[in-house]
Length: 495
Length: 95
Image 1: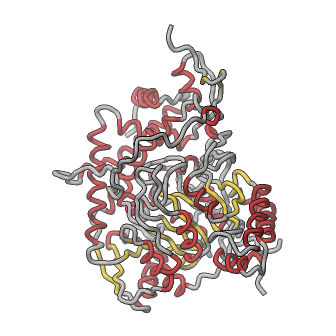
Image 2 (image 1 turned 180 degrees about the vertical axis):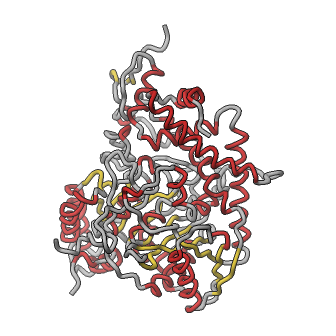
Image 3 (image 1 turned 45 degrees about the vertical axis):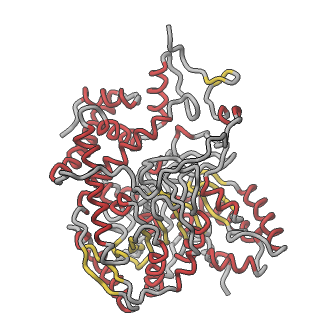
């Protein structure tokens, strides 16, 4: 018989509704798992067990009356980039180390409205800037997976590394992530879980701490796509407080799981066969094509000619926006302050002490590409190339329904294998960034293990607001891949 | 190519980030290598291409001109690092 740590979000929901388990029991089991395992993983920045127990008690009362929303009594973790009313929200930065928002982000408010139980705030790269969760001011997150033959600490990917590790290790049933250039999909792939970056404008950005506003998009991370679909339906929706929120109805995403892929046209972008890609990633990609073909999809080669410019364009556009967004951390209205005798001195000292090295580097590059004399050469040119990247996708989608690619060019690497050249580090996002630039939705599903026993993911990219087709195709891969492996560190494994 | 110390210092001044002398050289090197890498965008022909400002999916909208939020001074001030009554405090700016 399966134990409490074998539940998926969907099966826990069903067991709660059927009163086979209580929300208090479920929540306590997860709080206990966090206490046992998170000293090592460091996936949480702030734990809220007391609030969680209270919320679980309220959930049980609602469930007893046959009431409660779609997430009633479900224990979740929240990336510490979403403002939570009265609960410290840090963006994993020293500069927000004591920031307690007096309001709730729209995405978390939606989850609370549906009855979710929050276990705390999850670690990330500082201001979501990183691909390995090594830049957090609260220390790195450890990936619960281990290589077969080694005890080396692996990175969980980033920036939503705490979310990914907590879901993979069974500390939460699902988590929120945010994705600016791959920050949901790459950590999902590195930890053997599923994650969806919805269409830009699908989930409100209100109350989510900004990195690059034209790219940032919230999305769900969970053990499978059914769980992600349930979360996304709750998180998504029009919000008048976000001017980029799109007013279009939210479908019942869970229903899309059963659609199948018969007759679906799946595009394989030829430019994604990048130089130096490991053979096992290429093989997994071929395997993905076979899986989809076997259940009735048609595989079609397509071209996205501007793929190689995706990353450099991203690093200009995203960093320019970041330099502007992070100007608000000035030591005056909120955040850490370092006193000085002049106002400029106060700004410079507060920002020098409050930001970590990667954040400083990115703000400085963003400032440079926006500065007088460089704006046209860098920023404006990047925005034009971004148009070409988006057109590549729109053209491809005239001919196919969905694109299939690997999620990342490698599996999780060890914390001490981090490349010293920042450009090498940025290459982690080579397959995820272009969809972010175009604003189209994309997801990652676990598809297999590499030769060292570490998970690998496949990415699907879809048309604007067609998350349902993504979910249908992703579910076909899930069924074929039958990925039931578990990480070494997991709540269900007794020490 | 590394950015020279003068350039890094000028950018840091614009961004209001105080740098230690030893940071300037490392940052100049890192930023230089990133700038060199993004130079490849110069090979793309962007003649006649409009810049992409956003995805264009959300349409600009009008709303009724009425107060929907506010009257929460204490909440707004609740995270101030230093304040006096209902004011944020900063070093003297005007002589």
